[in-house]
Structure formats: structure tokens, C-alpha cells
Image (cartoon, rainbow, N blue to C red):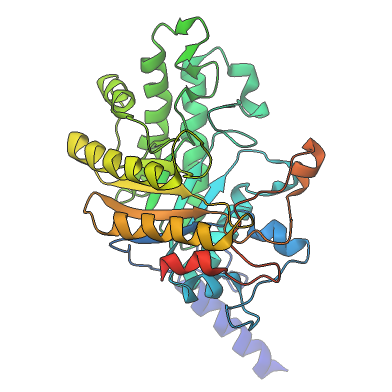
Length: 366
């Protein structure tokens, strides 16, 4: 008994001398945990932010040959080398919150996948139709300086948690589809009545608060804003934001070639390619398609061809440095709990088969 006590005492003394206590675990931020992943020259990515909620509902995944496997390995098997993960401030159920995002990021990094963090600065989706202030920040909606502080503190808090978990993101997206600004009305750019006075400057202040915070934690990360409609001429938007002091290392765009009906999907692909080239040339930065999706359930073969043609085109030009499919892992009519409460339809661009295998659409990433 005395020998055992002596051995434990010696172990504790050695641990103390090394700056750790015997109670430290792998989850302790003071542990030297690190999952280094090289940034790919071309990101073949997938936004899989719904994975943990899907798994909690009993959904599982398989390789294309039907072998059961972890989703990260399934994605890597079809050529995916990167994931994109959104983060909300105080989301219902915790899904896509800080802790949920960090856990998924660790899983991805352990599997050798590079990580993009997508900040929405909201408790739910931020997009062209909504840029809602988080409830916890609502009292400060009329105080631009306080809102900028919230953005900075939230960005710092999330990224420090990611760093403590051993993950270094390759890319950080500040805001999601912020065509009309962010955190309305504080950072809104226009209303039905026209442009908001100082709107660009206000937005730039909020955006830069996120940019600067991201760079402070991860100086080498590529930090960028994000707009929808890659096929449109968006140069005016970036010109105005840069003139207002906005800083960006790259440009992120969304591309859904079957979502509009004015042109054929092939034409939308062509228009997007032209805009990628033009934006990169004009602003001297790379462009990422951080969201792409095709309507697989409607016609898998057609969807696979549309995406394959687009991937072939972007990989053939220098300005585009990556493409991320938005939530390909959705299958079998699954939808998150919040969709049910809102009476929304299930997402119709999932790229997995009804039994949890990557469909032929995902072959575009091989």
C-alpha cells in the first residue's frame, strides 16, 4: 500500500513539474492537442452542418458499395477533402452552436479534412431573406459599436474553442449571403425605400469586427465575405464594401444552377464561371463556391451531369480554389426539427441515396 501511495505521489509530482495535473484530460484546453491538416490547393468540399442532428435521429451512412462507415470516411472516399460548418449564436436545440460545430470540426480534422467555419451571426439561418440579430444581442440593435463588439467577441470565443480543440481552420466566412448586409437593421444596406445612409460603412464596421477577430486567432486563415447568386455581376458589391474599408482575402459565392428558371442550368454554370474569373481578376483574390447544390431527387442523372460539368469547368481555371456542396448527406426525406416546427419541406438537394450512400452526383468530386 505504501509503495502504491509513493508511486501515485511521484506521478503527481512529475505531472505538476510538467505544468499539468493528474486530472487533465484530452478535452482540457491546456492539453497539447493538435490535428494538423494541410490546406488543399483545390477544396473539394461539403457543408455537413446537419450531420450531428441526423445521427441523433438515427440516420447512418455507408460507402458507395454499401459498407457502413463514419460520414467523414464516406466523404473522403468520394474525393471530398474539406468540410464547411456553420455556427449560430444560440440555436434551438444547440444544433450548429459552438459546441456542436467544434465537435464536427474535430471529427473532420481527425479524418484529414480541411475545415471552413461559416459564421451566420444569428440564432438561425442568415441569408438574403433574413439577417436576424441573435436574441442575446437584441437590446443593442441600435448601437453599432456594441453590435461590432458582439461580433468580435462571438468570433473570438468560437475560434478560440476551435483552437483549444486542436483544429486550425483553413477558411473563415464572416457572414452568410450578406448581399443586403448583416445583423439587420444595424448593418443593413438598403430597404424598399432605397439605400440606407452610411449603410456600407456600418456593414464594413460589423464585418471587419469579425474579420479582425478571426485574423487575431488564426492569422493564416483565408477570411472572406459571402454572397448568393454566383451567376450575377457582383463586382459592384465588393467595390462598395472595399471602398468602405471592408477587408477580404477571398470571395465566397453560392451557386444553385437549378434554382432559377430564366436560363438553362448549363447557362447558369457558364455565367458563374465568367463571374468567378472577372471577380478574381478585378480584386486580386481567389474565389470559392462555398455552396453548390443540384436537385438530385428530381433526376439524379441530370443533376450529376450539371454538377460534373461545373466542377470540370472550375477546376480548369486558376481563380476558383474550391467548391463546397451544401448538405449532400441529407437523404430519405429527413429534415431538422426546426423545419418541422416551421412546416417547411425537406431539403431537396441532398446527394445521398435513400439508404445513406453517396449518389452518382458526388462522383463529380472524385
